[in-house]
Length: 400
Length: 123
Ligand SMILES: Cc1ncc(COP(=O)(O)O)c(C=O)c1O
Ligand code: FES
Image (cartoon, rainbow over all chains, first blue to last red; front, side):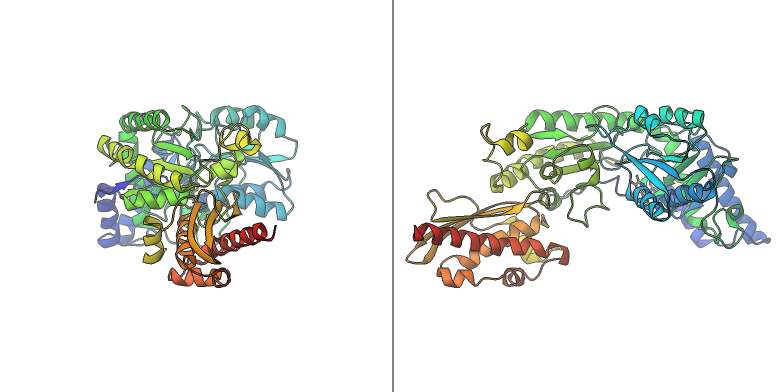
């Protein structure tokens, strides 16, 4: 059976060149970067080269990058590190309702410790308005944390504009760029950000490696304590193979980004156009144009997302519904609900995220297998025939 | 995560559809969690002669709907009322723990349909 992987926002395959680089540090160059001998020096060199590559990719200085275990840890360190370091200045944090749980849950945890958190709403496209950020700022605001691109719907936030507001008011600004990094430009001086989270496994490096950009001179405290690694900002013997892999993946992403974004945008827009034209009661979730080049999210009304995923999987197509992290719960995605999408429609969401190995044939294959699946599931749905202008619920939800 | 039996019923669900002029109909579910299930009965001489379902829900919801219709078909109303959620799940070789409430739904929908039939008879 043909297998099509359309779930690159969940994770990506490791790029062969990245795997090769990584293998070198798993196998031959095994030293501890803190050791003075040859073995250690070789490993140290690998770590610092990778740091330079990541720094170059986001327009920062190498010493502003620390390596972490991934996006989740980077988010934690940025948010808690700023909160604890700036307690005497204020206790207010601004975030948005569409953030990844790695951000939201840390903000919630801080609320229990006496911090006040404003969770900004988004519009129907999942966009945070800079005006709402400006309106939420108080004398006590110490941190704004808004993601660059959303993992579930692909919407790209106006980070530069929010960054300008934060800078004017002297408030530290963190962005979770886990989904955007490597796909669209992420430049710390253009976006005017002080902290940026990135993760390896979304850019063809392995899972369990990430990085955090910390602008030089900002008030921030390390969360984990121990050895002197990463200049005491993230102690623990470095994950040398992972770090080398992340550096290589960042380097490749920078070389290929422009061409790849253009290529994937064409595939994305073809898929959107054909689905929107050929099906009734389907909508595109997320911003129509300010969205990641590889990201599509549809809501097929009258159908539940998991049935759709199972049916696609039986045809070899791997996609997701909401985020992989949300699929364990029975609640519809908090992102779609925050965008004002009714729960029953949110349940029918289908996220397709394209990647480097996808091509025209993959899109055609998907478009070929989809009609029978949609038809079968709708025929089974008790909601399908109910649609009527006389029905109040219908008018409010299904048909609008 | 699903048993082969669940996947088999999901892929080839039994008794999908509606019955025109049904003896009883039962609908359960709530769209927030993502399951709505409707069961249609044709009852003759206290026996379920025909049964059909329509379901909006996950793989487990569709498989349990299919299974409960298969279990109920040909049974007397008293027998059918005894079908438990647990029995449906067991017939499907089990369900993932977080999906157990889908199987509740299947038996509940059947019970509601039988109740609906009995109410109609009482009139
Ligand atoms: C926006 C966003 N932030 C953070 C994470 C977590 O990253 P990691 O899996 O590397 O911890 C993810 C991954 O799902 C994500 O999409
Ligand atoms: S859709 Fe509610 S758990 Fe099955």
